Image 1 (cartoon, rainbow over the protein chains, first blue to last red):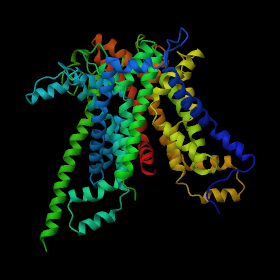
Image 2 (tube, chains in turn red, orange):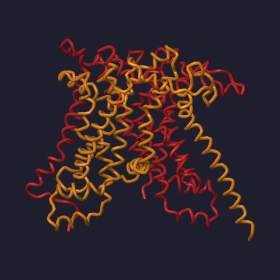
Image 3 (cartoon, rainbow over the protein chains, first blue to last red):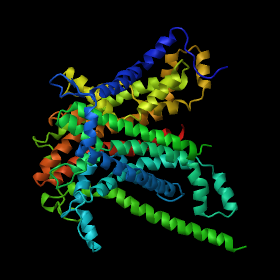
Image 4 (cartoon, rainbow over the protein chains, first blue to last red):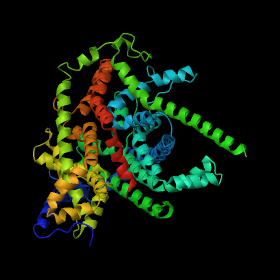
Length: 295
Length: 284
């Protein structure tokens, strides 16, 4: 007896009909689009006049374009800080919420709320909180004798963008880590307790090695999110609100295509973004074989 | 003999104190922006920059202002609702069918196809955005909601992955039993697997609805004009206008009402929501 369902006769037709939407999406929506973007990246096209084949010039332009270099650098800076921050903070919250304490449900709900909220709505209130002269954050800092900071100016914009993005991502990370933590057999901790291990030792010897799959999974999710982070950054750094500016790759793609009608250049940037993400994923999966522990 | 339990007990007490302190402090940080949003939305414009959490003179005028003609809030709300619902319906239907095929049915090329689908999860959406935009422009569909919801009916890697994870946990004996009863492939999907997968379907529905409701990039590109755009883009647009007019309070009322439906759904269906995320992380 073989497990699973083997379609017979006319059922083969049913099977492929059921898969049709996904196949269309995969072929045209994703793979076809990637190919089209790749082709477009070698052209100059404003959608109105016929596209011109320009070879590698869009890519060459990326290396000399100061604005894009800044966007690239910002994206890397942001990702390098965002990924570890999200992992450490949500793991800490998950560990605390994995203990038998009162108000567990309430705490989980509260920590999850930002993850449900729209980034646009949340960013509106964060803008108020960060405001230099009127914001509550500077008022609180003032109470402790600190001086007012311009949170959405170029000096501190990276910090502000980071705070808001991590705030919005803790909920999801917490749940993923909680799922990993509850899967660890209790007996391990009981055995360690009999051997006289303290909490710190238990964490490094049992918890950490056993949740490496969750950490790996979160690293992937957080990296993908970091490289595509857009809405909070867009909302926090738009013009008209002081001199805040924090261009990232996605913003650069958007500006190029929909503000400057430079679809070829934007395509080259999109391809570059994809190559970076894929390269990082390759690195992660290489590291996974060495450091991730599957039972 | 007496020393060891004592130290363990003290260790536990210390741990409890640390746990509660950190959690309460964190909860304040997580909730703070929401409290500020609620507080400001009930303040008079004159009090908008005051730092008291309780509005000195509570008012509902900010919520009334949303219904002013130039903002057109009800229309934006309606647009967000029907677009998000269509997207959700499309995703549930197509992802469930594909997930069933990948989880239960044996066919040639299945694993290759599924791997390909998973790989596309890692491709940034921006890569596919430009050609999709061009196609919809050729079809003269820019400025309509079609480009927003139609792709949802082409399936999706995330939803398919999520539901497949759930379908894999359904006991195989059910398939065999249904086969003996003479059920066809589609009947097994429709009458056995779909009803069993209600929690996972609910989770995906909430996720998808939330994602669609909160999306900024796609509506910004496909529906840039204010009267027929979504609530999210509308709010982003009014940000500049209202701030220039010194009406943060109206902006907060708009922001609050825009997240209220999602918060309500979340509070009601928390279990599904959380299980949905947990599902994606556990089994690989």
